[in-house]
Image 1 (cartoon, rainbow, N blue to C red):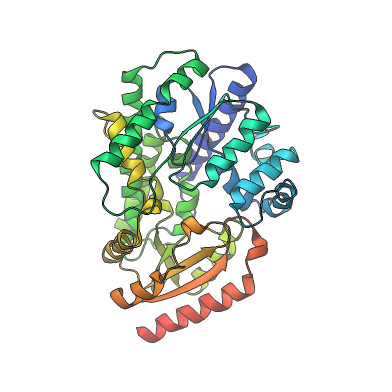
Image 2: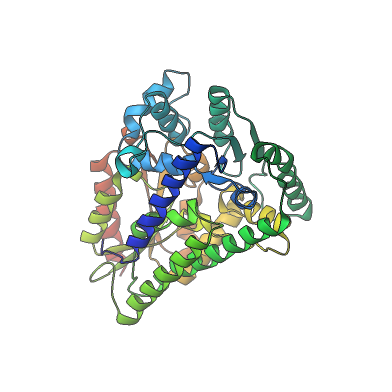
Length: 406
């Protein structure tokens, strides 16, 4: 992958994020809240918490290939190898008192939480994951229970989620020792909205032909959109990144020299195999230009003038909680904008909620859009579920198929 200069700023943001959390956990101030990746981070920031995202830690365990070592540890505690490998690798790492944060930032451990806050819009696993820590660490847990498999979203659903978010405030006030400040909350919502709009613009630079960057770049540079949304640092970072990518487009700089094919990645990344997959596709002159995964942190519905209702809408309009009809139309809309000629579906063994190839979607989209699709088997973290040789053969054959269609 061609180096993106803004990456130097991103690395500092990520380092500061973890070092601040470590300091707060040791000093007891500010309070630390653990939050699921698409949980109410804006409310937490607005109430003065520093926010830690265990799913981000799970991705780090996958990317460093430490996960497979720790998954069996959680399995030995009764957690099935079939459930979320973020959960099992993270719990296993905790039990073994090991974290990739040690090598990356010098932290001895993940930061101890003062409160655990979940949103089940990702899956039920996140609640079970946090419940394990609530029992283990004896800290309070609160959360939001979302709707799933929905088409048209109604005012009733938005109103219910908004009330659930409001219902978190008494516990958070008790933990933080501070009263809820509406203006500070609105400021966090506004910053998160600005981050989301910039992140969308950054991703959409890949509509250019050739694309200035790839899905594999985006999985790295999405870090601040995940862990720092609701902060000024994230907004400032994506302005810099957007300017750099727009300049690449203007100069005709291609992420993949001689770009011949453009793909859409549907499903979770295979964290421990990002580099080999990137290199393989580069050798085939094929650029992954878009994905549902990286778009999962676009919340431009957020509105500081209606903070609770807009948060409820943003977190209820997510791709992952929608029905098949909505998801297919979403990908069809992406097809028009990004001009890809194939879709690569990742069937992640332990992540059925982010695997959309199990109910006939690839076949329906292939017919509707007139493009080719391929499904590779694997997992987000558990590399025992992934055959590199098989995936290589499938991808090479898929690109040959795209060649024949030209």
